[in-house]
Image (cartoon, rainbow, N blue to C red):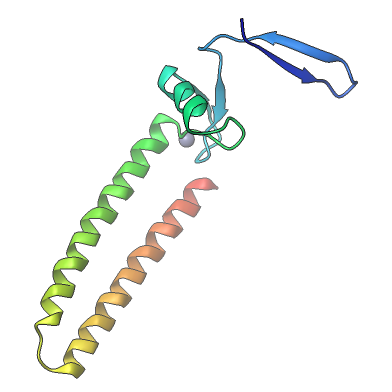
Length: 121
Ligand SMILES: [Zn+2]
């Protein structure tokens, strides 16, 4: 039997029996309570530590995977364009194209950051 031992503010010590399905955390995205399933608990016990680990709720995971998917897609575009730009012979034109791509990426990055910020509020 594994139990949790903690000290209350008034100095009283408390022991609570714990079961695998009784772990919770707060979603770092929206603050909603997330019930940890077996896999999550295993993850904490094996490679994480309980103090610094938290899990996103289902909705936030979905939103994040869309963003991550888009970032991957965007990275592929950048790779293709970078390769294409390398073949451009005129140096001033090549520099101009790189700068345009940089600006474009920065705009998308700013947009995604703003979106993430506005969802926190
Ligand atoms: Zn959430």
